[in-house]
Every structure is written in C-alpha cells, then in structure tokens.
Amino acid sequence: MKGMLMGRLCLQNKLVITGGFIAIIVIGCSKKNTVSTPPPNSGTDTGANGNPSLSHGYFADSNFKPTGTFITLAAVQKDGKIIIANPSGIGRINKDGSKDNSFTVASCDGGEIHSLALQDNGKILIGGSFLLVNGTATNYLARLNADGSQDMSMNGNSIYDDALIQEDIKTLAVQKDGKIIVGGSFAWKTGPQVQGVTPHQANLIRLNADGTFDPSLKPYTANYGEYTSNVTNVKILDNGQLMVCGSGFSAVDANGKSYPNIARLNSDASVDTNFRWGGSSLTLSYSGTPIPGYGQIIAIQNDGKVLMGGKFNRIGNTSYNGLVRLGNTGILDQAFTIYGYQVVTAICPFSDSVTFIGDMQDANINTANAGVTVLKADGIIDASFTLKFPRYGDIYNIIKETDSTILLTGHIQTGNSQGNNLIYSGIGRIVKR
Image (cartoon, rainbow, N blue to C red; front, side):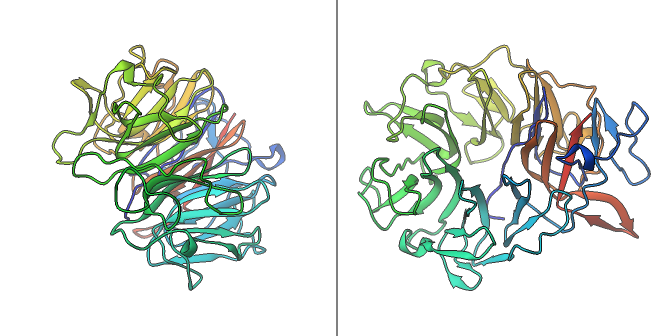
C-alpha cells in the first residue's frame, strides 16, 4: 500500500490505540437486543483458535458476523449501518455485519482509497490515489450517493491536476457547515499559487459542500527538507480551528517560525502561534532510517489535550515512542507515560480515564494484546485488559460506534480455520459489558 491508514476507536471510560500485526475478530452490536451475552467466566478465554472472549469488562459479540477479507476504513451512518472500504472498493454492511444489498459496491482503480468521510445528507466522500471509480475517470476525490452510486456533481478531474508523482488524499473531514477539509499531497488546478511552489501544489484545501473551491482557506503547502510534505490527519475543533499532523510536514507562521509535524491552524489556515511544542521547534525522529519521524493520527481528549500517534522514537533529544500527549498550548505533557511502541496508527479516547491504542510493532512490549492496548489516564498500560488475538495483519482504523461499542478494521480473524487457511472478516466489534 502507498500509505498507512489510521483511525480511532472508542470504548466507554477508556482510550484505545490500535495498530498492526493483528488478526482478530473483536465484535459487538449497537443494540442491546442484538448484543450477545458476555461469556460467564471473568477471565480471558482465547480458545483453541485464539477466539477473544471477556477481558476487563469487554467482550466479543458473536452476533456481529461480517464477511470479507481486508477492510481499512469504516464510518457509522446515522441509521447504524456501517460504510466499509479497503484500498480498492467501498461497500456497506448492516448493524449485524451482514451485507447491505441496497448499496451498490463501488470499485476504485489506478490507485487506492485512503480516506473516508460522511456528509450530513447521507452522501459519502472518498479520497486517495485512485484514478478511476467504477471505470469512470475520477482523480483522487469522489462522492457517492447514499445508495453507493457515484455523484458526478463532484469529480476530482475538475479539481486536481495529475502533475505530481505521488498525489494522494490522506484525510477528509466535514465541518459543521458542510464544508470539506481535504489533506494530503496534491496539485490544485484552480485557486492561487501557494508560497512560490509549483503552481497550485497543496497539502490542505477546503471545498464548499457542493465540491467547489473555498478561497477563504488558502491552499496550504509546507516542505520539510528533501521530503515532500504530506498532511496525514486533520481534526476539526469545536471553535472551527484545525489540528493537523503529517509526514515531512512543517507549518510556517507569518514570522517564518516553523511548527514541525503538528500544528493548530486558524479557520483561514494561518498558524495559531499559541500552540507550539512548548514554545520551541521540536522535531520527531526515527532512529535507524533516513526518513524523519512523522505524525500520523490525532485525537482530542475532552479536556482539550491532544494525543498524536505516528512513527517516531524521539522528540528532540528525548525518547518518545510513537505516542505523545500535548496540552492545549502544545506543551509536552510530562505526566503522560512514554509509550512502548514506536509506530502508533490509531487512537481513541473512549473516556476521560481510558484510551485505546493501535500500533504496527509486533516485537515490543505488550505483544500478547496483538496491536491493541488500553491506557489509563496517565498513559500507563492497563494490564487488566488482556484480550488476546493472533497477530496476522494490521489494524488500520478504530472508531466509536456507540457509547458501549467500538469497531476495528484491518486483517481481522474470526477464529475459525480450514487447515492452515484462516478465515478473515476484515472488521470486528468490541462491547463494553
């Protein structure tokens, strides 16, 4: 795959972080009358095939029975149905995991789907490096109707050039007013030239709800040394500001000061200078590679503190593995325990006291949890969460489904086997007891 996808998943009163090398089925349901009864035992029962059972008040709901092989993205609609996507297509399943036959499956070619967002009107946005949707030329961005058919009123061909070698939309977010934030690395056909770079090259733009360019947010481009910058994740704050992170990304304010890897932007994309890594430019690094460390995923806690995950093992001269927490002014939270994994792909603040985390390392601490770790409020690993799953693939996305359920996507094993061939569902659900 061209890029790593990240997402977040939430459970009540916990933070969850997810990542890779996991083949699991973690399942549950959004309705009380469809959630299976928790196993009677109070410990963890992994079974002969590694079937997750009950741990620390969470269990796998056997009533959720999806089919498929590999899912990277998911989004929950207002009616409870779940939009699912992998690099080459997008579909929809019902709340019990069965296929929704009323939805037309869309396929993408010439590249991959890397981002997904829902609009309030039920339409679906997808972004990535693809060039075709259902055989129709569509560069990098597309919108689908509620039934899965393509909405041709928004077609990336009219928005993006095909001038860059690695054009890719990594993240999509929809504002309360319906406007669409688009992040990644791409060339923009219209609008002003940015910062003297190649005409219309951009990492961050905003579209109106109808897909037209919104000039009130200037296209934003930033480069970091020899590496092309890439906005990998955007979170829209309640006040309309944008929290952004990226790979090779360094925001620059009006005075020329640099804000590497993560920045808070005002609604016009100007840098909020009140959020600044504790007042200094601290860069992320990853030892043993020629590529700088990077931020990949952001999560905002209820108290306004910011969790950032990515691929790094140092911030400045200090060891920080894959996860960091910042105060609402960007100051490093020294009270937050340094995490053990070096590549974090998904974060979900489930409550004020619990966070779920996913990572891409299979040889570091807590390997028994196979890419899923629960942290307490101070960042200490909650050892009582002991759901164990075989580690066969990656967890790409964790999302909050309800106040008591979360969804995981990736290479998810059902626990069944046929000889040496594992059966995968691609998506699973965990329920809080």
